[in-house]
Image (tube, rainbow, N blue to C red; front, side, top):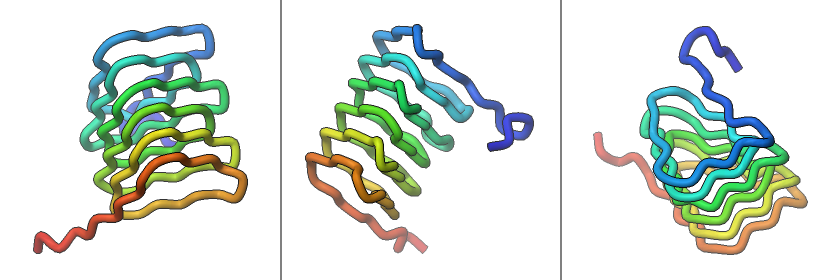
Length: 114
């Protein structure tokens, strides 16, 4: 992860955020977030201690912790082995590691708008 090029915002383990989160840089969440997360051209990473109860709209999403809510990704979604996701996922590409938990529907959309 290069933090110099695009910038990386971090929400630490002890931080609790309630409301709407939006931004134009990559976001790493290891704390608690409730509400909505909008990072149109950037990626969201939910760390191993992260607990997110939010609808997510981002370019890419990596989940290592717990995410409760729908994920809308313009590029890809990665569910790591420690991930617990409850909600629908819509993305161009998805990767689910063995051991990850997913309860919801997955919709893969193609980028045929050429």
